[in-house]
Length: 64
Ligand SMILES: [Zn+2]
Image 1: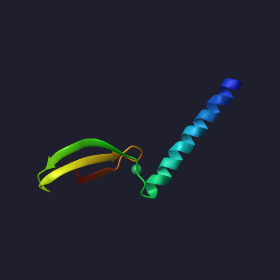
Image 2: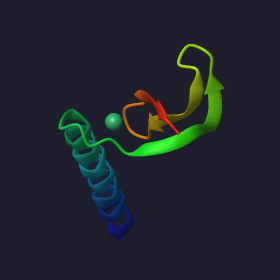
Image 3: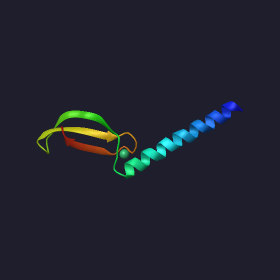
């Protein structure tokens, strides 16, 4: 019994986390992970860093 309850709570927590992350993304607060650092962008003619949001997988490219 207690195991089932714990699993339910765990699932609930995970869901809440997911929802919160989604809300943050919608508000423009993405959690950026660097996936490609300081590589040369030929189009921009400068070094750029590519970041991807951990939650919504959106990609952002910025100068260095
Ligand atoms: Zn995001």
